[in-house]
Amino acid sequence: MADGHAQVVAGEHTSMASTNILSELLGSIPQLIQEFAGILQASSPQAVLLIVGGLFVTFSVVIMGYLTAGALLRPIGGLPSQGRSYGRQGRGR
Image (tube, rainbow, N blue to C red):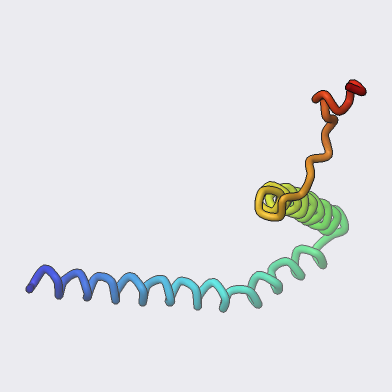
């Protein structure tokens, strides 16, 4: 029985730790915005680099999201493939 109790306590501790980490993460968002605003106001080259970096990250995330959604939804939705068909249909027989 002591082992079962120890597992329950460890499980509660893990969930409390993950809740604490999540609350710290969400609480740090305003601080992150203030830091980025400070970088944008510091100098023009830093602002340009920050914006270009943000655009690169946004572009790559959108492309990967699009490819992932297509890969997951094509088998589920039964969408036709867009490639050429080299079967007997294409030869006229």
